[in-house]
Length: 124
View 1 (spheres, rainbow, N blue to C red):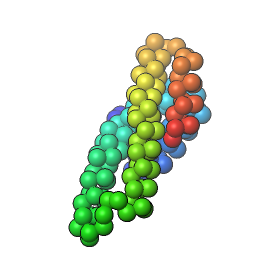
View 2: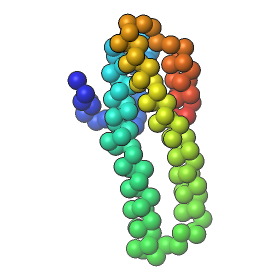
View 3: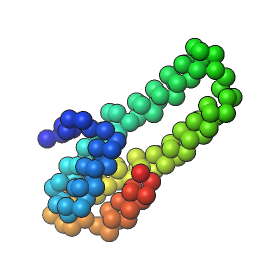
């Protein structure tokens, strides 16, 4: 099954992945990590593109300069969040592949999985 639960959000993604990870159930980890990658592709990636574009359009429509301090701070924070998000995307894809491989080979998750999840939690 390749569907996402209702109400799937970023917080939901973290909650589902954390619960799957803690369960140590390889089937659940493999499916959840696959869905986390899918959710990022379907929801987060478009939002990353649309939010700054529409935000800048709204600023222009009401005449607020991009150089206004709160706008600049917001843009800096957006970039910082993006710098954290990009490695998270890589980690999610890698974790999903490691889980799928372990499931397919009927083997335990490799140590690399745990290390990547530690980074994922930290960056999240």
